[in-house]
Image (cartoon, rainbow, N blue to C red; front, top):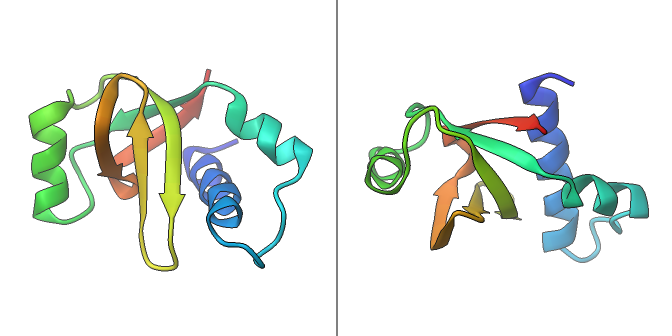
Length: 98
């Protein structure tokens, strides 16, 4: 699965989790997001404030573990297991499966 396909799948599943009436998350989807997903900050994409948030709290190119995502109709953020209490714009990351 490519990085883009993985990101699209994750966002699709978390979108269903965020909005009732969009569809129910299947057991297969729930199992998919329970696996360890690696998030790699790129330093690109998003607003200047998103890039500053990354520079302040993360290291570009370092691998972090996805904790969860919050997806709305026009934006999405993620939280990382290694950085509690902060959320980051998903467009600032590449993703891969461990």
